[in-house]
Each structure stands twice: as C-alpha cells, then as structure tokens.
Image 1 (spheres, rainbow over the protein chains, first blue to last red):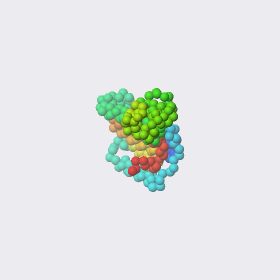
Image 2: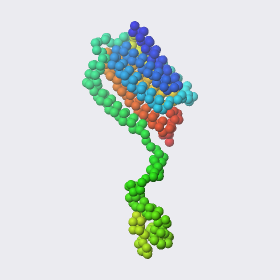
Image 3: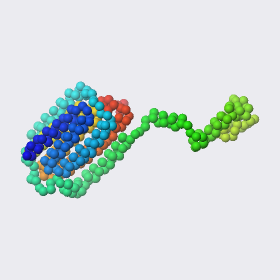
Image 4: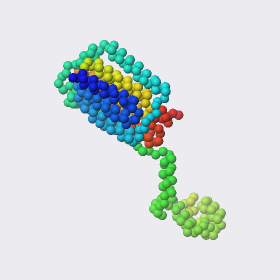
Length: 244
Length: 99
C-alpha cells in the first residue's frame, strides 16, 4: 500500500517538476509547482513527517504560491523566447551529469540505512508537539535567527518594491507644481521674498518706466540691480532690497 | 519502501531544478526552479530524519522553508521593481549594472 502511494506521489512530483521547467507560460509553471508541492507533501506524510507536510501545504502551496500568482498577474508573464544556444545545450547536459554523479554517490554509499525502512517508529514522531519542543529548546537559536530573517526579508521586500521616482519624474513634478495656477498671496516662496508683489505692481503700472516714476529705463534698472538709492526718484524700497 | 527510493526522487527533482535554472530566462521561472531545488533538499532532509529516527532533519526542513519564503519575498520584490522601471523581464537582457 505504501509502495503504491509512494510511486503515485513520486511520479506526480517529478512530472510537476518537469512541467515547471518545460512549460512556457509562467502561470502554468506556477500551477505545475503547486501540483509538485502537494505530491511532495504526500511523500512527507509517508515519511511520517506530519507537521512538515502540513507546513508544506499551508505555507508553500498556500501562501507562497498565491504570492507567485499575484506577481505573474502583475508582471504579465508572456511566453518567453528560448534561451541562448550555448546554455540551451549545456544546461540539460549539466543536469544529466549532476544526476549521474549523485546516483553514483548514492549507490556507492556506505550508509546502511539507505536500504532499510527507517528507524523503528515511536509514538509521536514528527508531530507538532515534539517539533515545537525541539524548536524552543535545542534549536532555539535557529528559531530566533529564522524569525529575524523573516523580518529582514519583509522590510527588504517593501523597500525593493516601493514606488520610487527617477530624476525625470522629479523634474516633471516640480515643473508641474511651478506652473500650477494658485490664488494670490497664499504663501508661496516667491511671495515670501516679495517677487510676487513686484510683479503685481509691474502689472498695474504697465511698464517698468512708470513704476520707477519716469526715470529712464536703463538707469532705473541699474539702480535696481545695484540697490543704490541716489537716483532722483528712488525705486520702491521693497523692490530694491528684495531683488538684490 | 526502502529509503533509497526517496533519495532517488530527491536527486531527480534537484537535477531538474538545476537544469531549469540554467535553461530558462524568465526570472520568475528561475525562482520557481530554485524552489524545486530547495524542496529536493527538504525531501532528502526528511528522509534522513526518518532514517535516523530523530526530528532534527525535520527541524532543518522547516528552517529551509523559512529561508525559501524569504528568498521568494525578496526575489519577487526585485521582479516587481524591474517591471516598474520598464526593464525587460529577461535575465539575458538585464545588464543595467554592467558598467
């Protein structure tokens, strides 16, 4: 019975893994990985790792895969073009070589337990109670480091995926703010330094000459720029100071 | 079932994942293949825990799951950032850091 279950689960897991690699559409690859993960959870159950199997289904096939599906939907995973020719041949070759090497290592091992059916089962092996006790006693440091790692990853994901602005966007925004119409005297920086009042006076007077009270324009301009008061008809006090 | 069979399945899944990382170009699918490799490692760890009769291997498997979740979070954040900056979602085209 357990042999039949093992072969069914193993074949589904391997087919799911091949589907992840072979399917062109990323969404189908994600769904194939969900299939693979559920089959792997069945294998964990056959190995009497009940808590790991439950965590596999809830955390992996549940949460992580939902995250994947959302990102695939957001990014819009279209079909991809095939890989470059060199890697396309080298990749499968490397995988086959790696599997041959690992199988040789497995067959030539001196590990006697590899042919057996495992240690004798004792009651409560792999249930949440034992796992929890081990986590809070023998493996407390690993537990704390894992929680810290999760915190760092959460903050890192927020920082990475945040909407940030490039230089062009910033410049465009500033230009938009500057050009936006705004009621008079509502506290812009230009009003604070008096530029706006001068512009208003200029608008009412009609021309620079009238504003300066009949002084010829070039003299008035030099007087304004230098900020000197010794012209006959001095420029308005605020404009002389504020434009300097 | 002899426990060697579980290890064989683990080896196969790991090699499929490694080949996928090298062949595929979409970073999303590369992350999926990394998940495959991590899961193969998990299966081997749980098998060894069964062989040994202690729960330490299962603890390691759970920690590996945590690490995989962190890796997925950061990796997907990177992919979202890449797609926001209108770069192609393709590891062969991404050479922004290539001076």
